[in-house]
Amino acid sequence: MSEPRPSDRHDASDSDDTFEEIVDEATQRDPDLAVIEAGSRTLRTQSGPPQGDVVPARPTDPEIDKALRAVEQELAGRWGETKLEPSVTRIAALMDVLGEPQRAYPSIHITGTNGKTSTARMIEALLNAFELRTGRYTSPHVQSITERISLDGAPIEAERFIETYEDIKPYVEMVDAQQEYRLSFFEVLTGMAYAAFADAPVDVAVVEVGMGGTWDATNVIDASVAVVTPISLDHTDRLGTTPAEIAGEKAGVIKQGATVILAQQPVDAAQVMLKKAVEVDATVAREGMEFGIVSREVAVGGQLLTLRGLGGEYEDIFLPLYGAHQAHNAAVALAAVEAFFGIGAEQARSLDIEAIRKAFLAVLSPGRLEVVRSSPTVVLDAAHNPAGALAASAGISEAFSFSRLIGVVGASEGKDVRGLLEGFEPVFAEVVVTQNSSPRAMDADELAAVAVEVFGNERVQVEPRLDDALEAAITLAEEDAEYAGAGVLVTGSVITVGEARLLLGRR
Figure 1 (cartoon, rainbow, N blue to C red):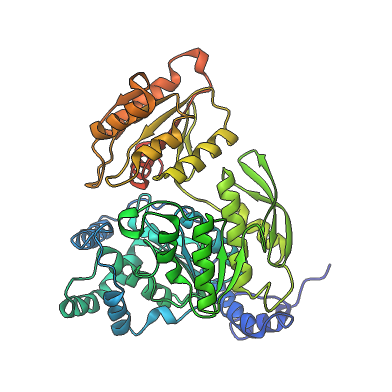
Figure 2: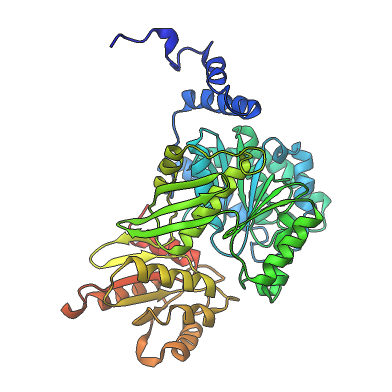
């Protein structure tokens, strides 16, 4: 085989023809999309492929670490994520003085109660597989605040996080001075994310709401695709006490003429979403109707799926995540990306199956039925409400053959801890109750009192320090040869999971 001529190669050094050749290659595709992808791929020849989604450690450079801690401290001095004044007035004012960075790129907006972050990661991986530059904004973080803002599939570098904060800080202070209340922690982070995405620049932003939808700080975007993951009861003091009331708040992300990707919902929640879609002339694709799971098999390290998308079936997709809920998240993510590309409405075709398989194969979701240790096996899951507990219980029962499962639970104040514990009761032989270091952590003794009512006194152990709780659970899992197949599940809060992840040596 002869050596290809230089003109036949897309070498990074050939800066004068790369963009034009890529556009020419895409003549069979939508012209606007071809130009977007060409620009993206040109940038990738300069920056290299995505590095994969990981949980970043603290910066090794002492000066950068010091600067990051200073930013974290300044952000922590603002209203926390649980103190809210339901309005987008302040974030809209910030966007205005920043020059509306959130309008510099199209976006996919994700709301719901459970599964938002995993679905966002899957959407991001799929878009990356089609060589689009992505920005992803999710919350809360597992270990590092920089996880919340990702560029091209990897958390933003600490230096860039610091620079972004310093860049927008004068504008934040300007808005603070004009408003009745200062911008909150979450509002400033949202402003940072939107500014970082515009500066990158990204081809598309994947944005997870912080809470609700209508008045969530993220809701200053006009997303062409709105994704609604399963709705259940959580944050009932702020969002409502029924799925329908909660859906009313979350429906605020559905914008005029958008496409709504609707996961399986309680009937009353689905009715609210459909009514909102009709009001704003949005197109709705429903899981179980227009898209869904065709088949699912448990496999080593994950599961093998056949998914029905808006443009056809996608077979032999390996998803390296556990649980039926993650398969449903995958179906939702695939439909969202198809909708973004206009499939199912403007175009009747499927996406490239090999790109889809490659994307799902690369998906990571730290703290979601994540195995972090063996002998005994220790699994982390960030379930923090009853629906999450039921999903995690089903997933761990299906994917692991534990002879005995020990739970380590540390929850946050204000959560339905009884419902959470009841969701885990059938699968936990014993539970070690603890608390994390957050000021919002529920007191271990208070949590234990509820746990005793659910599990009985003999099955509950209290260890206020998380490190002691992990040691106690691992000891229980190891103590008898009879229980050689025992395991440990750490759960109850994203914060508990993040701290456990660090204690168990994951960086």
